Image 1 (cartoon, rainbow, N blue to C red):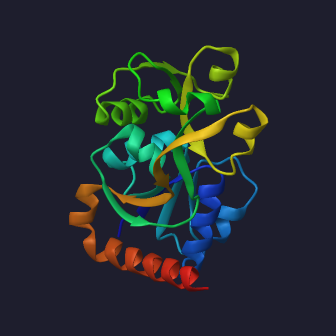
Image 2 (image 1 turned 180 degrees about the horizontal axis):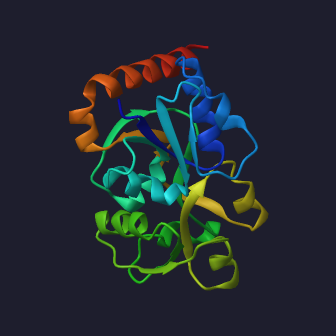
Length: 214
């Protein structure tokens, strides 16, 4: 029987996912080895794990290179791929927000506002929903710098603790949505391998529910 291929985003999401899978009875010992390999297998060789950049997880799932995967909701919103979002895994919780200087609070929905973000599509969709025409400047890092040096008026970005905003004199002006890690599945895989995938999803859901009750 062909292995189920799981796409994982490198870093914290992968580490937490491995913890959950172990609680589901999958021996993930080989995944904890200190290695640069991008393809690994569980001890029973039932699952193949591929480690990719977070933004690439939806692409691997949509194109069938992986059957299931774990990715942040922010990436799903930005990439907008044709895949099934099956579970909210509850970890990696944060918020997508509009942030800037406090005095900009009353002007964040004005036309021609300059907005810095690496989440260009999320920012476009948010302002389109408000009927506002904005100038979006794509930045791939340190978006907080945009308002600080006057490149933009505000930013659209993920906020966890808010410490980086505070350190740069910025505040959350409006929350767009709540974010967390999500379990996603390839549409064809769910149809053709339903008897293998759905029991795994059920186990993961049970583990998540138990952890929430602690």
